[in-house]
Length: 307
Image (tube, rainbow, N blue to C red; front, side, top):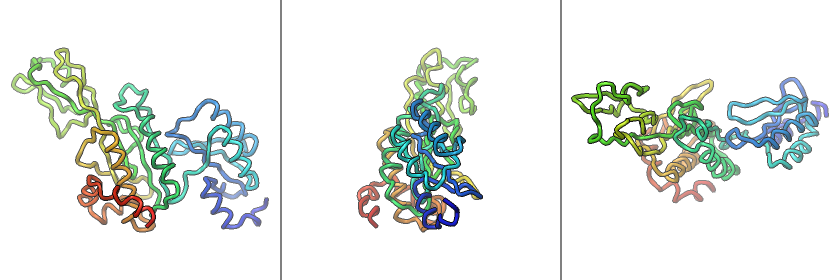
């Protein structure tokens, strides 16, 4: 099909389906959705076959861990979608919507404090899929990090969730070792033996979990795992570092509810075209935090979505 027959309306329609025009050509890239960057070997084989059958054989990867098959003619788009659907795959990830979730490999990483595959898949199903028909003021990105190493930069997303490990310090078991293994190995220099006892500087501690179970006298054991949530991060022409809510969430469901409340607040109070960071700046972080820690937004969920 020539470029003259592809109208702006047609291009807009297929962009909503996840097909982006390849500059200077009549062809499109198909954005294939993954669940936090994870696909099966069978799905990867299907994508490779589809790239050769309908595209130019080239596959690229996006910053949000989706895959793009290049060089698909407009009149092959429906066939491409039907072919990958056999492997349970779909295209999408564009528009003023919740975008595909990005996750680190915390489930298998030695530093992971949370099962990031499981929680990001839950976020994918609950928000990317569950809110796919909800139009927002702008795109909305969510990232899941397994620990404060911050590999996928959750604090540069509209909402970022990071695994935490709060030290459970049993002071009575501390021997005040002159060569304390905890203070020696703390990456933030947050631990120090003072007057014969270990002291943890809460201002410096980032809850990375490196100290848990390391003391030979069991002074730090069974530490508490949870989540820190950042809101209002962006990365692009304008960079905004997300701000952490003043609470570590121990309960996973409570953390997921905060994410949903952030989406609902953005839907209700965001202005068309502005990113969530701008909405937060306009409303004030303290006011936004108060709403995210309250339950009013969830109680009015249907009203907000329909509005």
